[in-house]
Image: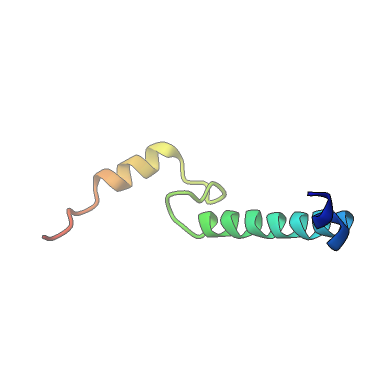
Length: 61
């Protein structure tokens, strides 16, 4: 294992990993915010969401 760290700088590897994980987390949050069901900033209460789901039409087969 020590030979791998002789090839790569540990500080640079951790920095790249941190940037990648932050970008991944931001992307996941933005995808969730773009959906109607998981948008927690829209202001729709849970009761309003359940009522809208209950009143939706059934899919055609």
